[in-house]
Length: 408
Image 1 (cartoon, rainbow, N blue to C red):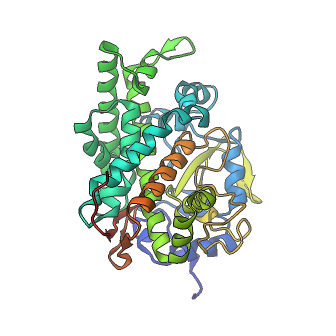
Image 2 (cartoon, helix red, strand yellow):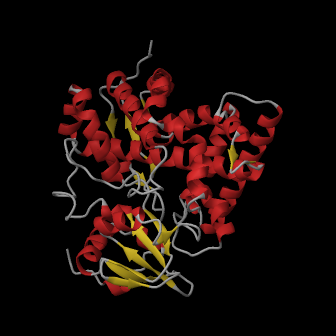
Image 3 (cartoon, helix red, strand yellow):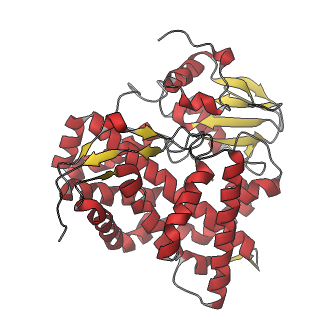
């Protein structure tokens, strides 16, 4: 490719994310300016952009040097502003681990084993919902249904409210894509999700159930109960993280397999053999979450670059997961890749993804069912429409067709 003028690149400009060569631009940053000063789009100030895998891991693992209380995006916020949208993601010790412990045990592999049958049944129901049509939009009709159903079941969300919450989740996380909205739309969606969660909290105080909201109502942090607002924000975090990121991985994973039919055929032919490495490679290659940020707690450095106290540091998972220093032939999709030290679930440290084990099991059951029940599914890659958002790598549309059949 031609040389990239890195001085002309503004990663905070939504227009950048429409560029077909954006991964090549990040490759140039890794080579030439792995820790680079970037200006904000249409406002004063800026942040440090971190594009290499090793530096991303170093920042995310060091919660003392790089804190979350001032926001986990590009902009530095007040702790109260950051908490409204980020919840416990925007809290440091001791608040963060205390909040995390409330539901963390639910997401361990041991306890998730208790709902394996339910996840398998959900996968079958999702595929059955479209199996007689012969064609559908894989992104909107299929990919988001599995995580939407699983997460809403765990949170006790009524069936009639689920599609509306899925739309709010997309608006909250898909900002930058002109078909979805801007930061103002995103903030309003976050507030609407918070308000819905508060309503669930009030309902569970009156009538407890067997769901995560009831668990939060009964929980205490440092001897004090969570307020309805706290639970609403916690709800918003679980539902936004639980739906759109897994849905993005499933939709993109299907597109990757369609581009590599020989790997698709191999996985269908021996599902259990390839599933562990294939699912990790889908997450690496998709990088469903594009970036996160931290604030320097004191004067420090990253990759030899001096960082001043209070400056924002943004690390790009989408770049770290294609780092030549961490992965052999990183632009190649390979369902047998091992080892695979990707940062698709975060770069480690106390803020690593709470739901990563759940996401893995959801995708495992979904792809197994899909391959078994719709073995001749074909994807129309020419009609694929990606989301050009700044925070998530998702899919607007992915048309597919298959032989209609009724699942017994």
